[in-house]
Image (cartoon, rainbow, N blue to C red; front, side):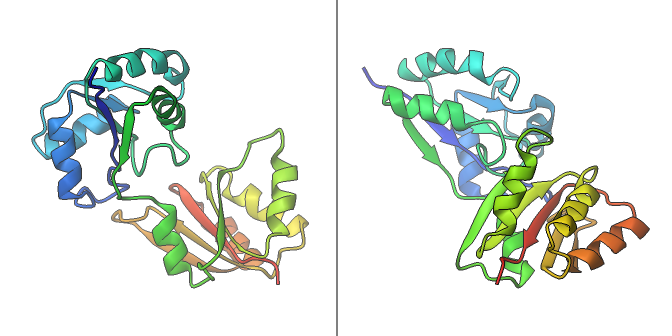
Length: 225
């Protein structure tokens, strides 16, 4: 039996031009496109005149959808997997499906492409030869334990945070005696209102107390000396 293949396709995190020609070709050739939000991916497909079937695949249905998708791939179908923005499985749905495909012997191909934390890390000016990527911190359970381990890291720390919790995060870092630690916060990467805020933890907290934070953030924190 000839199995199909799962193509993991990064999509733009802001500017729609931030997609590769290869990604467009793969999307055009797919038997079906699995999308975190069919409306978001649908807009991208229309922009590039791609007319392929779409099916929702997100955090709320991935557990129950995985087995059926793997069976379809084993029957010879070729699917493409997209998240709303960036590379699937990086703080987005996709890991469970990739793992199930690997276990079932279905080929998985991941295209190189957009991921929010990479440009933020590069422009931060903080050491990027060694770093730790955390993604989103837990909202409640386990949050303080995770923060405690991160502030003790000698490597540069990269994580994601929402505009609703960025002030809370900065306040927590101050409680862990990181007031003078250098930090860089990037928001709206590759979008019209892209912004990079640099300073110490205390300085950036004052900034956002005076100016309400907007947009999703990539946080790059200096490692402990």
